[in-house]
Length: 257
Image (cartoon, rainbow, N blue to C red):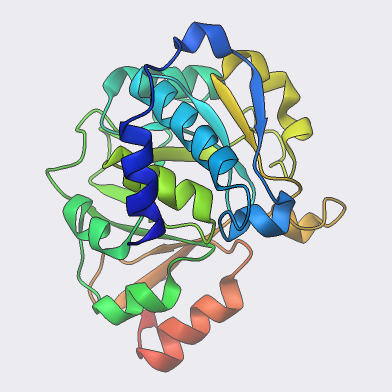
């Protein structure tokens, strides 16, 4: 049985979740630190499960949580909940017309929420990984998420916790960086401590990369793949060179810009 199936079963039988208001600012440390938590639990399966369980509960109540990814720390909520979307904008102090990306747990989920016009293997060559792929959205996606554009960015971070979280929730997460808008991105939970009072849960996965390196704060490489056979780099991010290698050399795609 896959790990996520075991986790889903365990989450489903847990006791009722405490209300979001009882856990404001609560920090929960994933087992294993930065190395162990990125690949999933190896020993403390129960501790990992309890953090997943708590996170699922507060998300389902409209909460916004702080989470580690493979690039920087993020804040996440349920993308299909319009109230949750309003909550995450309030946490960020974010302009309401600035779009949010979605995070899903598996390649197959992309087809449900996006109109894919690239080879399936291209998706699998880039994801999971530090890349955000921008595509035309499908009708399945909440229409109140980014209502001013027909496009949506989708991520599958190379981090076990957030992938399992999206899979157990059985719907996409809205995901953005864990910082006040216009402020630098964050590589540890302490760096966005000013947001803790506004978050239902903070999941501490340890430092992500070298906190003294500006390159580690670049975030994911954002690529627009909405035009068939073409790509546009929207944000160079931390994975530009390998992403270009795949798009140009392996798939023969050309830049639209």
